[in-house]
Length: 216
Ligand code: GDP
Ligand code: MG
Image 1 (cartoon, rainbow, N blue to C red):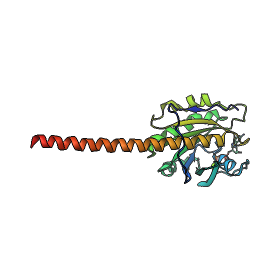
Image 2 (cartoon, rainbow, N blue to C red):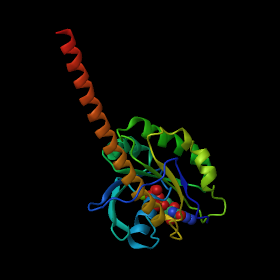
Image 3 (cartoon, rainbow, N blue to C red):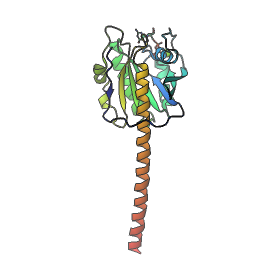
Image 4 (cartoon, rainbow, N blue to C red):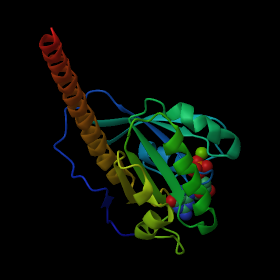
């Protein structure tokens, strides 16, 4: 399995001090490997999972000083309308795709865009786990970018594709570490934007006062 990473255009900035865990919601079609990824990152081993009816939640530590609380939400048809509620106020979305099942990639793409376009996620970063890379017929991560039309995502989202195998245990920690950096950058960008718009409002207020003085 290649260890190539794909970043959207912006470069990451230095890490911020992280004290609390990042809250992340993991979604994707049923059987894509979400629960296997969750427990692989928690227990460092592959476990046989039963289908998730509602959700699982675990705190995982991919490296020292980095902590995630990951919500693994069921991906069956009846669960998908709930994704929107789970992702409200999340720090990021993890979207898992079964790369060995080409017939369902289009369905996965539709669900990803439905979610990103309709949920209130305020530009939260998106990590795509291109899972089941251990299977011989797995679509590779470059092809997956095109198949999921990731370049058509709203540009306010940082996104990243990480090839993984929950079975072998490859790619998951690396992906989570990159996700931590993406969240840091997103938070810094939001802070910057807030400062800018406060300054802008302040200067508008000043010029309004000035023009009012001109009228008087
Ligand atoms: P979920 O419905 O998205 O939570 O998917 P599960 O984690 O329950 O996994 C569905 C099936 O795919 C199970 O039989 C897993 O053992 C299998 N699976 C998950 N990840 C991988 C992987 O990376 N490689 C292979 N070969 N099988 C996997
Ligand atoms: Mg599951």
